[in-house]
Amino acid sequence: MKKIILIILLPIIVIPAFGKVHGAVLLDRIVATVNDEVITWSELMRVIILDGKEFLSGAAGKDREEKIRELERPFLNNLIDMKLQLQEARKMGLDVNDAEIDGAINEIKNKYGLTDETLMNSLKAEGLTTEDYRARLADQILVQKVVNFAVRNNIVISDKEIEKYYEDNKAKYDVEEKLKIRQIFFALPEDESQKQAVEARARDLVQRINKGEDFAKLAREFSEDPSRKFGGDMGYISRGSLLKEIEDVAAALKKGDVSRPFRSPAGLHIIKLEDRIEGGGIEKVRDRIKEALFQKAFESKYREWRTGLRETAYIEIKL
Image (cartoon, rainbow, N blue to C red; front, side, top):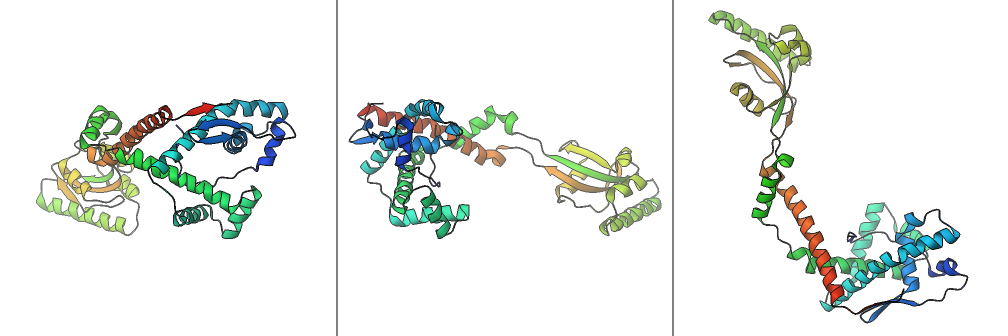
């Protein structure tokens, strides 16, 4: 499916340039009738030269003619779809006003950093008048309106659909929360006075860290945990596998924060939270799932809608 684009800078190659494709003299002809409108060969060639630019790049002579012939039918089908959608928009009474076109032009200028002068020079270089360019933008805006009205606005993704998709794809979305922690650990002696001395040493280390000393270096020097040889690095640890006291303290820390000394049944800890990987759960991915389901539904319903327009239209192809 070709994606519907509201606003893009669309250059056009002037019609006389197409005369070289099939001879020196350009004899225009009707290549398709769509209800009460026609598509001419020159109109089709404009689109092929524009949208098939990459495919035609570097081709010349007979090779270029052959490549253009390969593109004629698929590009004609795209033009027919465009005509049908514009016709449907007008049946619905939809239109585009000058303010909307002006807004689209301003958006283009802002996006590409263009001034009025550079925009006009760009259009002139492509052989495009301001009036032609505004008409082209108007068609794009009108197609977007009818697609929104007939398709997009009629799609509703329910909570039940989101929850079912989540349950069917838990492995994709459900990630355990993990904490990356460094620690300095001290075993606490039985004697209370000795415990106080250990705590005083731990408080002194926290002060040194807060003044800029390296946590890992101090862990290697003072920690009594096997992780000392890694600078206290305990790696990424899943929630639920840590001591409750460590998890509770870590939960209150921001990335890069260092805790005060705190006790656990194992001893005395100072921890630094180096990183946190947020856990899964449907609420964390609800919007992503809704967007994915919406896009899938849109693509399906948009195809159905376009097929329906073709089935009720008079289309005669003379290519």
